[in-house]
Each structure stands twice: as C-alpha cells, then as structure tokens.
Length: 338
Image (cartoon, rainbow, N blue to C red; front, side):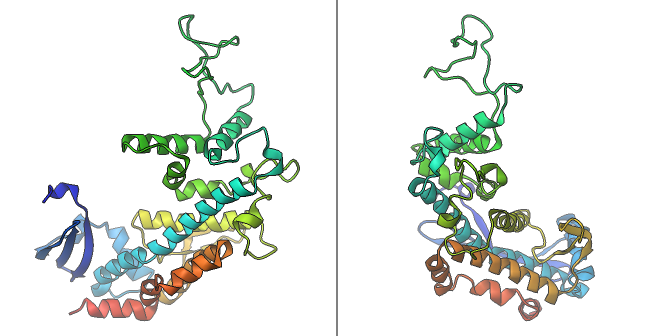
C-alpha cells in the first residue's frame, strides 16, 4: 500500500454528545477500503469549533442546546448533498458557453478574436486590450538596449510579441489554470483550461462587460438564446447573472464550511442581504434553501432539459430533499441520540 499521506480521508459517520465525539472515517484506495474508527475521544469542542458557529443553532435555527452538535453535523451532510447539483450546473454551463461561442459566434467578432477552440485565449486578450487605455500601459517597456524590443520600445518575447504587463482578472485566472496544468505534466489544451476554470469565472462571463447590444462583437445578448435556449422568453442577461451570483455565494458558503441553512432578509433599499435580520427557525431556513436548490435545477433545465431530467432520474437529488426539512433535521438528531 502506498503511504497514507497520499490518500484522502472523508467523513463517513459523525456521532456526538455534548462531551464526547465518535468519528468513523474511511480511507478509499484503488483496491480496498480501510476503515479507521476512533471511539470516545474526549474533546473540549470550543477548542475546535468556535462558540459563534455553535450558538446560531440555538439562537437562529432554534435547536435545543443538547442537540447542537447533531445539528452541526446535519449541516455538514446537508452541504455535501448539494455538491451534485452544483457540479451538474457548473459543467453544463461552461460546456454550453464553449459550444455556443464556437457554433454561433457573434457576427461582429470576426477579425477581433478567434471563435474556434482557441477563443478561451483570444477573447480575453482582446478584452484586455480594450480595458487598458493609453493612459494605462498594458505592455512592458524594455529596460535597456540589450532586451529585444519593437520600434516603440515595448519588450518582445521569444515569439516576437509584446510582453503583457497589465492583465484583466479573467486573464489571471486562465494563466493560473495553464500553470496548474503544466505543473501536473499534462498537455495544455483549450478544453483542459476550460474545465479548470472556476464557477466564479463563468459567472463573471455573464456580466455587462461581455454585453454589446450595438455592434454585436461580444457574447451577449447574441448568445443568450443559444446558451439558455429553454429559459423564460423575457429572461435578461442581468437576471441570469444575478441568479448565478446567488448560486456562487451559496457555493462559497459550502466551501467555507458555513451554516448553509442560514439566510437573511433582503434590505428593501439595496435588495442585498441585511445581515442584521437573519431568518429564524428550521422551517423557514429549509424552505429558502430548497428555493435556492430548485433555482439551480431550473437553470440546468434552461440550458438542457435532458440534463436536468437525467440528474433527477438517477436520484441525485434525493439525499438533499431527505435532509432539508424540519422532519429531516429531527430524524437526523433522533438517530444521533442512540
């Protein structure tokens, strides 16, 4: 067997009472599953979980104090049950955008950037050039006569192209993806870069920066009907962007191990979450989380009804619905009393 440090440990079962913790972990290898079990390890829980993280279960979720640790573990399982729908949406969205750009390129894009598989490099190079004006120099200047430069004094690389000094955010994300692929000794291809980019990258691609209603040089609204062919007919790019931002926020909360059930009322003036006004109680919290979950399912369906139907057909959503309710929470707590 290879060294254990090369393997990942995943939480399988977490059974707790106020003073003791029992954890079962399993180690997955290619050939066998090895179980590690640790019994009754006495812990001061506040040493490992902040008081603030636990208090919200009694003050906001309205859980009895003796059930806080069980509810805390319920939140972990609930968060994990949302990963499949997030994965499905992310993969479906990025592939739909890639296909739309190559198959239905904006009419005004010709001569500005490539619209084949290499659009992932070319579009953002074009956008970087647009972003930086003459007052903010995009390219590096040569420092001395020994360096290779053009007639305007700009530093040239080994291919005879100007060396970029100022990158837009999207370019930095692509460069990071390229570096990671190279570090892993994999062949650098456009499809590998596309699959390595974050959900935030694709959300950002729906922003107004990529909208051009007049000259039709950019992505939106030209490609909206091709990326989201089954969206409501009056749905705008901005509405889709706003929904993706909410989904991205939820995804980030899962990544940062936050209480996924915790929501806030919107400020009527800003329409942003008012963090001084949390939603109280398990019933309201679960109802809001279900709404967010079904927004993700809807968006998958706007891109491809078949993709959504296949997701549901294979029961990928059942774990979430079994957990995300007052009944699901109570059953989880009851099971961990034993």
